Image 1 (cartoon, one colour):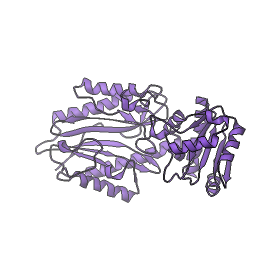
Image 2 (cartoon, helix red, strand yellow):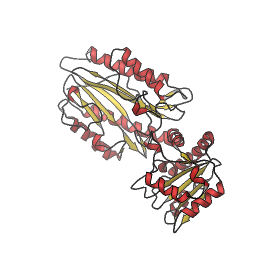
Image 3 (spheres, one colour):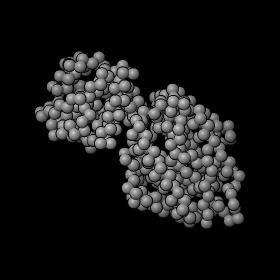
Image 4 (cartoon, helix red, strand yellow):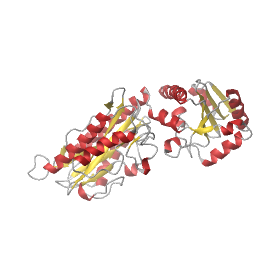
Length: 398
């Protein structure tokens, strides 16, 4: 029942988006999705298809599924489509008949040059679709559904937000368990193994692949980035950083937390460590406070980036934030600079209902990486923190 409600919410949003963008029909064309999924399908159906299948959503609110007859029973059970057509020998005649009835002037299909989450139609399937539409006027009416995908994936429904909150709460619980478990001398690999064991016991999945989740950085000798945990050991006087994302009930979290291992005789972190924490936390809070619906992603990034540079640190060489939802990197708007790799996504606007991560780091010489990440929901008036922001450096004792 809850899955049906979730799909219903997304289909209602889809009709609203088609009207906003003045697109007559959005066509999601798929086959053998267990092997080659289209990211849009999980939003509008939530299961796999076997034969060629066409999901047509119209701005008038029609929801038409043309599927192989063996797959049709699942559509009837879901009970959210207004018309279900099960075919036996081939899809072409049924697809053309429905388009002739609808007479759309624009048919959006799932391809994109800038974002994988909107690029679910393979080149081979595109060619096959063109063959199906050959000799009809509809072959000349195909446009990109990129902006539809961005909006639908980005605007989280109430059920989606509730699931993300749950995943975040589970992640924060794991951080507390890490703090109770970790001691100097443990390696990155041992710390990550503890987290993975607890995730298995709690029935949690991963927001990104398990070999790199969690990312654990111990002191100044660890690789920075998306490296898998290795054999670098945590030492006194060093920083411990963890980047962890769980997936629960189909939705993700993505958070980073920081600890300092007190050295002999220390009761608090050295000034250079504390200052780095204050600047990183301050940049996240400042960037988040600036974030408003309607502004392009690069403007949010610019505020946080300037904060870091103005405080004497090198700029971080990645985006300030990304959208989160079904997975940690959920497509759509990127809070990133206007670099080549973010072209087409950093210009997109922040929208109400978007869930973003806010993250950045600096390096503290001889101590390690200082990096934080929070998860936020964009509201009518600004943002709401879905995570409890880390506002103080956490300590580990020998």
